[in-house]
Image 1: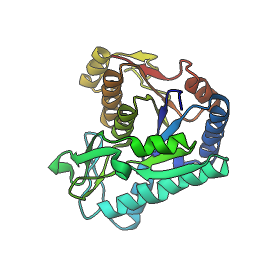
Image 2: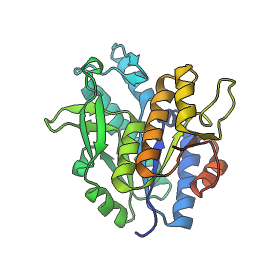
Image 3: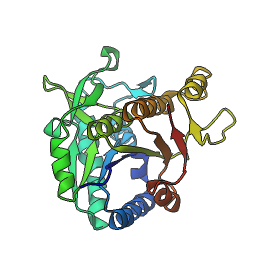
Image 4: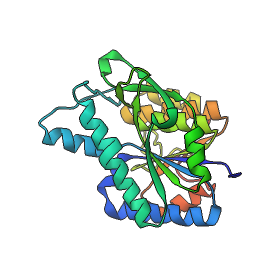
Length: 259
């Protein structure tokens, strides 16, 4: 395993489109067959959480782009993310001919998770941990599929933002990082794609409210990763498999977040 590992963060909205999910994993299979490069998938699943909570008659709110997670709701959210979303991703990988292993942030001590903010409830802050188990799985040519559920040192389940989780895993592995969502990249105030985004411009757009809520969380995570890893982080869409193959092969697609 001498090639640079690539961590890909997948937005949970992908699970709402069977066609897009099939196309994405088909692209990943082709990439793995051609490049023989270790891949790690990190995913959220907000749409599944929303549907589950609604079905249970529970309300859900967000604060600064992060889901407020009451402690009595974390068992349901963990089930949706580490259970349903994770296994749906694995099922598609296996159906595409990719051997996969489902994990969460706590497996093998991959990430160290602590409570982020008492006002958010069971929402975790995520730091790189021990990548030994993950490296062992990659060495056996499996595709790790990692949900963004973590566990604190005290044994408390935590809901971690998937962008932040992917950043911590990339840091733990010293890997390249690509963040994929349902938007083409980061947009400016006129709705146009920003091909390259540095820290000063990002902070200016956040101050003006152009980058806000969930996208602000994503951009902050990408900036942190670019600084820690010492290399750009790509933010792009999973909607276009042909462009995705170009992106994974090092082409300019979406937004490149730099220092």
